[in-house]
Length: 275
Image (cartoon, rainbow, N blue to C red; front, top):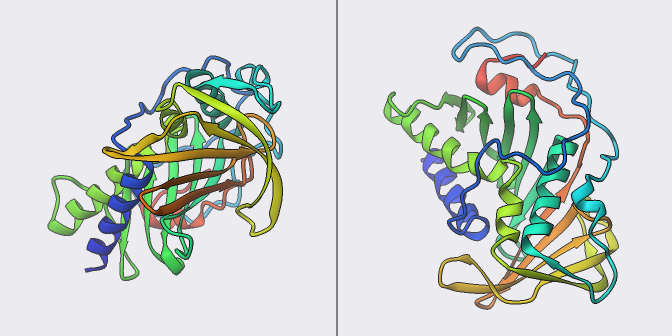
């Protein structure tokens, strides 16, 4: 029953933010990311769990802006193509290597939190359900889903529970790839810098950020056009994405770009040590 709840949650999240967009796991950015630090070495799937490592891959506190982002001018009235803005977002996320987001489907929704790490061997991610509910983990070659406190390894050819876990993992996988946010932005040909606006960010505080809005409604869900805006202080480091359409407003709050990752929960879920 809880697994079914997670599946419903993931489907809703995908509908609001994915809209049928697909992104590859390893697209080549226009600007190489900053030199990579040490990265996790994954144990073979099904291996024995090791004690959680305290050596988390280092990540810069303030990721340097890729060339594709430095070329975007945040001046009121400036127009940016969807391709250029999308490339900037993807390159920045690759350079940052880590980040997190909180998706709220409605203004009073407590939200679904996701954290990720783009390591040399692929992407690791952890989704936590509403109010600290059941979790889903994605690794480069597998994953796991939580069912009432019990972790179930994803296996499309396994038991019923393992197949359900696999469906949860694969629903989340495309949404945590570096190109996901870029794919959403590329749904619109042109974006306009509209000036600064005060908005609530991931840590609950209010900040004055640049609003970059699509010049036309975007179908994040097929057949349901919505007005979409990004809020950022510098190109690439998105703080908030807001979608308004059909009488509803949903938002995706971003943060912790380049921050260290606590891998303990991931290690427990997939019986691997990140070292």
